[in-house]
Image (cartoon, rainbow, N blue to C red; front, side):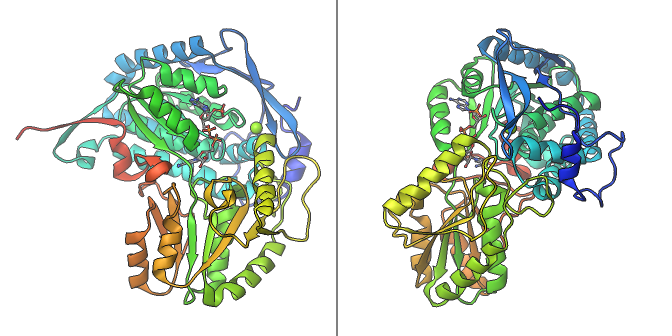
Length: 497
Ligand code: NAP
Ligand code: MG
């Protein structure tokens, strides 16, 4: 089993961090322990029944570490620890103390950015360039942003008295393990709640490392508890009577089940679910820039992105030109070792996700679609899938309707704005959309008429802690980020005049 920073990792990384400040402690790139326990009440412990799961490096299939698999008894212990902290030291902490600790956590994360980036890439398969330049800096940004709110909550919701909810259960997926942990923890803690966090089974390591920093920053024990495990662990958290709120990011199917499980229990719920984002290119757009946006929209993080632009809609007059340039651009994409800084598309997160992507594309061919993939292949070892275009799409095929969550883009054309909007909206999801056009009035009209929580114009996949993010329809409800994201973690009552 791999442990301390193997030379192999250092060699694979090459110059990826040449321009990076060395970590404060001068540590080696990353140390992976053979075993990790649950983090409950500030201490690490094995699962009560001794169960473990193994997390792997999906680019090689090699085991990275064994991680405790929490059962219902462990979830119960974690909720109890969170409750004690809420009734004790955390409840007594002043808003300014909460701010100070969150700022400290953000700084510690920045100090150890290299370590987090490498660990995220090893455990999840994403290109190191993305982990380094997107995941880790954005995670730190969320912590900084919410640290700023902690002692100013009365300005976030004027006219309302804001109180924390209590113990919140947070369940996150595998596609942005650290970033989703930060999105969840930062507002919950800023608002004065305590947390039981359940990371995804295939990528738990950065959340566990973040829990070490929570401790180092000086948060009281039990404010942040981490219960690693599989789906049953998440279900036990949802079922626990001691949680005041569940925040879930994951698939629509599991999200629906959670909503059913919570019905009638008075537990607050926010759901960030799947998507099938339309990426719309008009004939007056800057086509070269649009091509970069399309590529980023679907191949960033191997397409494991809830708000991916997975349905390309191109105005008929430029469809031929766009497709030609897109195919040429795809020839240049490097699929391979996620630790290589020149890699554009890393490893698919798990074998089961790879199988799912293959089934989608095979099914599309059976339904009469045409498939295009670049001429360079993909590595034999590990889980890889090439960037893929699916054309001859009518709209009723499974691949056009369901979320693939992989590097697969369907393409359709349209004539008018109305037709573009109708096609874009013909989905049960409503998370994201993108519009490429030079006309400002058209952007505003499209944004008004697209059913999506986020509409990007002449860009795609831009995130900012100050900007609320979330979906409509089967993409969920509730917002994360910005002032709106705070409300999900606060009990609000009107202040009497
Ligand atoms: P998932 O299967 O729904 O899992 C999400 C999390 O829920 C994981 O921690 C999972 O644990 C846990 N879980 C599984 N079954 C559960 C149950 N019955 N009760 C409670 N928790 C349970 O989703 P995923 O495959 O990890 O993630 C991909 C999905 O997330 C995609 O659909 C994507 O669109 C969505 N997503 C949405 C957003 C957004 O902001 N809207 C952001 C990122 C991803 P295990 O890992 O152990 O199964
Ligand atoms: Mg893993």
